[in-house]
Length: 206
Image (cartoon, rainbow, N blue to C red; front, side, top):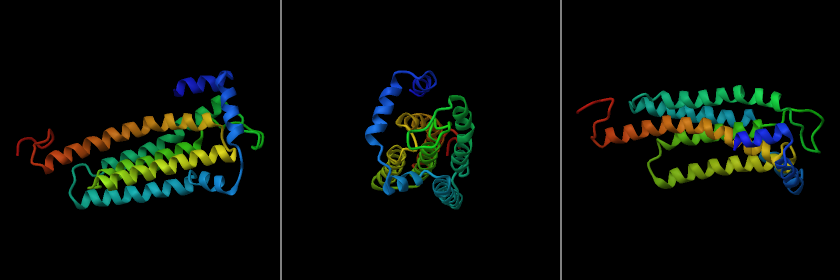
């Protein structure tokens, strides 16, 4: 999907007509949409991630978890890699902004959407391994989804980005979060087996 959207943006394909139409229907700059989009600012989203990673590292080390440092490190690395992908794409695609934005390029993909998706998504994935009840896990996952969707809606509503800018960032963030999920999910399963008395591949027979 990301490759398809990018090709449409670069070649001014027919999908952009629908993109402009949807943007025109949703576009209505107001204070609420601006506040929602601000949740994707680096100054807001990244500190949330830092606090969560600090808690996860402290919790893992205090409980003597195996490789407690790996999930926080992987999440921090995913966040650090984000501009490595975003900046070249913005320069290469050189997409103009909506009618309410000043002249210029570099709007594709949406940096605010990607920042929110990776920061809040990584926070949720790292926290999930320490939550004991299904209700707590559901609440964290729902909060993450609400934050990301709220930022995305605010960006389109305010006119900061076209809808496809936002969708493309979802796709890009999903790749980074999928890798992080493999890391955190694998450690969670290993920890569950160990706590249940089942030998893991790392520890061998007990």
